Length: 281
Image (tube, rainbow, N blue to C red):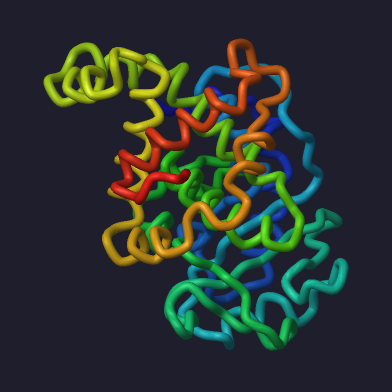
């Protein structure tokens, strides 16, 4: 489904620049400990899937750092200039970069408290998404990790829950983009029409292949994050802003993405069925 070799070097430049600088500064960090997330990740997945239309532009890099202890994080960040006041954003080789530690430093699972931040920060699902991630070769010769589409979607679902509560709704567009990718995927279409399991899903979704693709995305999300994280998501989803979610699910410049909130809701509900979540009203 993903051809990461299809990404032109210009798309990988920001990540390559940041990663190169971080690895020079750290004695404990390995390339395989770095998980690219956020908008740069989205743009790379978009191109790897063969889509060329423009999404929101970005000039920063978000990296998850699978670190063994806080000493490793402190060594990496103590000499970096800060950027903003989030406690996790630094200027790395002149690029704004969010450096998000996860793994053994989580306490409780899904939460970290960097000393520079002094308050809890969610890294929910990072470990599970990292475990299912793909290798991403960078132009400089380093290979880091990138989520699958399902892993990216999982992180965006919880990001919607976290940020919509504070009036920030951009994650709805990213959820929509992941649904669009599945709806337009030749690999997903082949699964739906050429496999027994896929044909069962098509029949259950009244032969609506786009809705069926959304259900397959939900199944892949559930498989990626596992039962415990899925139960946690089910307890919160879709939050108090369900109607606003459907309204905000735009995919700029995408051909064939529905303008109707009712149609978008049908996609979300199919994804929920795939994950085994209670249906939104």
